[in-house]
Image 1 (cartoon, rainbow, N blue to C red):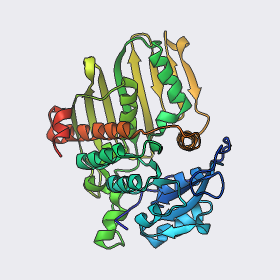
Image 2: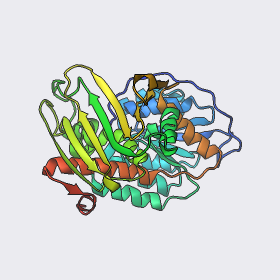
Image 3: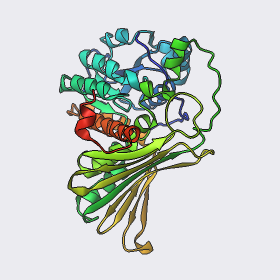
Image 4: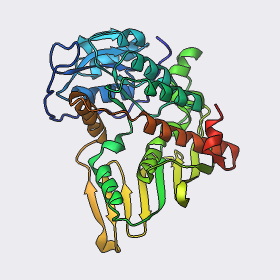
Length: 381
């Protein structure tokens, strides 16, 4: 298997939810459930894989990882993981004719390679974000997506696009209730990370790069790509387009390992003079968390988050808050299996690549300390 590595472990949770039963049997399955495999049983792969097994239309068919300890965790933490085939080579998993779909939860820099192989294997694909760690990788993934069987569902882990609260906010924007959109902001403040002391790795150098992929630009894209792509995806989504240029500043003040930065401040220029501002930082020394987007219109303001959206109109009396009913990754997973079962065409690769490239545009603007255009960024690889 090519070098896979780990998503940093996320807080594990239990999520069960009922969904409609599959209407038809799929491919080589013995029953009506969609058989899926998990490539990468690190923290994120185990988390999303566990949620997928909670969908009554899905059935875990295989797991895959290059590290035996991660295979063991997949067997114990993904329900049914101890009863299915465990592969060490992702190509062998993709060649398994009993599998209809695949979850790609490997390091960012490997997404293009693994996505390309999954397309060739004609699987439905749920790929974690972002689309790649650099411009060349994103271009490779997008080219593969254009070759994909149009009958296959291709979805990425940009969960906000499937949240009922985000969709309700978008509906109000499109209905004109906000008036003209004048400014967009994305905040991603994640504390307790940059000040974390560096500790010696017990692994050999080659393995260390794979297991600790999140610490370096070459394997993660830097935190503006791996982390802040979520908020930038929402800005692009609500703007109905992508930026034409960016200016920014950022750097490294506290991080003690790897070569990633720990703070950025980027202003994106969209068509018609619309601006989007990204504030991304991992500098707070405590586990302080503030992740949200704000959209300012001539009539109202919308604030969106993973747990609610708020509508501001006409002062404090016009504030209305709408809370999310559940963790929004569940909404994304439900959409994935619904599209497969209902045989709906869905391929969001272009949007996922555009949002990843938007992150890379901001990274380049910070590195060069000047305005960088979309064309310059695209021509860089």
